[in-house]
Image 1: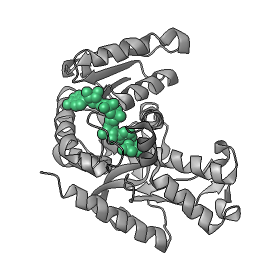
Image 2: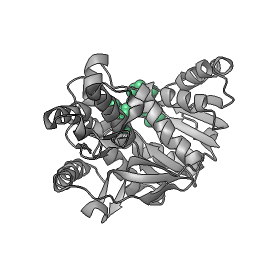
Image 3: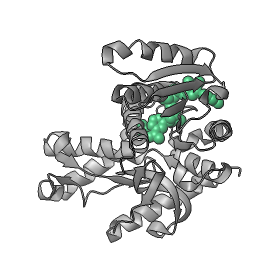
Length: 308
Ligand SMILES: NC(=O)c1ccc[n+]([C@@H]2O[C@H](COP(=O)([O-])OP(=O)(O)OC[C@H]3O[C@@H](n4cnc5c(N)ncnc54)[C@H](O)[C@@H]3O)[C@@H](O)[C@H]2O)c1
Ligand SMILES: O=C(O)C[C@H](O)C(=O)O
């Protein structure tokens, strides 16, 4: 199993580290445009191998796509992150060009690759790849919901004063400060709805904190987060590589599901060896349906800024 990660920055390197520690891939290639950077990150990570007991071979290359040839899965983290006070949408001007050329280079050398898009604004970048790359839609996957759901569980556990392993919950919709739709009505602690334990006001606060999870970290760190994003990407890559048939909310191209068309946005999907093997069309409450429509309108507006 060969995995390429384009962008050896904060998220790309964290992703490579989690993939290696989980020890399911034979090879990880890190590629970056900055001279020597991916090589350096790969060497540093390989010096963790004996310490962390993994056998994954990590190599780094400067912009040489021939070294990515035959990749089964490729992760796109190349591009700029936001700074405090910015929205993800403001990154479109620079990141669209990067994502378009990177995806085209990857597919040229690995025509059967499954792409995981991470660069922001992620739903729009996933849509861009869908519109410009010669790949079936099941092989184009946007990562956002897995991360947002992990942040939702963190906030739920905090409110419940419970261990995170007791808590389950999912966030669908667009990966943006306003567009996320945390499914509070369905979140549970050991199968009991969290509304049994938390007031409507507290649950609303949990949802609000979840939606600004990325912005909160960006303010604290001066740039956007990388540990949880890297872990979330590694979970998606493992589900595909190991044909796990696991369910994650991912950004995928919709053709009527959730009443939406011609958009990539976060919905629950089953991930296995064929990438997105199924879009799971769950029943939403009227309130959740309205929020999903509003979220989709925001993503569509950002998509309109693309030069397709
Ligand atoms: N979808 C999500 O949930 C999520 C989570 C975290 C970050 N992100 C996004 O991921 C992206 C990367 O974030 P980061 O913190 O790793 O940034 P970073 O600046 O640390 O790393 C980005 C790397 O991309 C490289 N790069 C730029 N152009 C390139 C090109 N054409 N080819 C190859 N490499 C290129 C840069 O040299 C840099 O090393 C940002 O757009 C950020 O907003 C998304
Ligand atoms: O917040 C960001 O800009 C990065 C990423 O999308 C995140 O949610 O951490």
